[in-house]
Length: 451
Image (cartoon, rainbow, N blue to C red; front, side, top):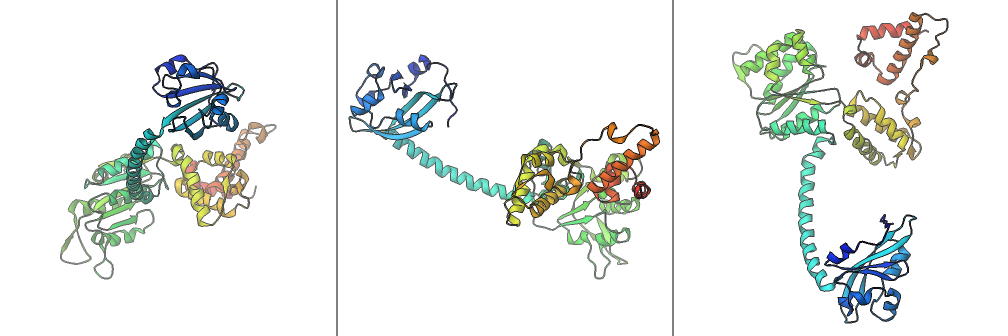
């Protein structure tokens, strides 16, 4: 039903200035307003229409059929073709106007001569062909951008970060991408490569967080026997160093020397091998702060910090989160042949979770919901146990009576550790989120495990 309402009769200025064939009838079918063009196609003047009943005009064969009774019955827009006394055909559109109680009080109708519609149809046919071409082009562009990225970008921080990456893609300079785990750093690196002049060459990655120190240089330059180094394989392409902030200082020094010389020696070989790679690096920590603390090599920092780009955590990109939740629901419904839906309560709960693992974690939880939920409409209690939000603690929950402050603080600490263990799983992630060392987490868990 249309949501138009009318508090009083339509203003006469609208009809006096209108060049269209406009007629307004009241709920009894009496014509109360008519524009200057009204009646011409029916052999009547606007003055002859005013005060006339559309039911009488229909009986006289002037309105065949009358549109007002149909709009009153349907209570929505009605479109029909009328035959006029002169034999011409008119396309009539009628709209209901409702009063404050929601009842139809007036019907507004306007008409187009059939010959005018033929001209409009020709225009629309041309417009439709143009739109089809634009849709095809848009589909192609979407495949090149959104589908290849694997991310839904809606928030300002995400759009700005990826736009910066796309702008510098053609510039043959290093790019440093900052962001927490799961924010899309590797995806952005791949997109920069795809838009660069090196797109037809290799894109290789090396995870500095997990590779053993003894194998780092061997991975880069090879060993002259069975191992070919990444700098050789990626020559002419792009090398992505993930988690470079976790690289030990002595390996940072070796990497800086390689980048400065742009050549390396393989094993004990006599020749220096030149290389040409575009370097993209990522870091979860603050490299500028690490330089000040002497934990990151100043020389390497200034080699890499040419184009810094920051990807914000998912909880600071709520527009992205709002779109990603239903996106992953659709993806996993299709993957597992399910038809799960989210209740509003569950959607709100998902929006309020911290998501320390960002998009990777969200994707994992959405698949778990689809796979394990036994009902079509999923609720908050379908969340994995570690994601169910507990009621906020109050001092009354703790119990102050007869207890010392150290005892109270131990109770709070034990509760926090229990929640953190359920939510983050590993002691390493717990330490990161709680802002303490990993050995401290282990020690505290052991302290409370029997209490």
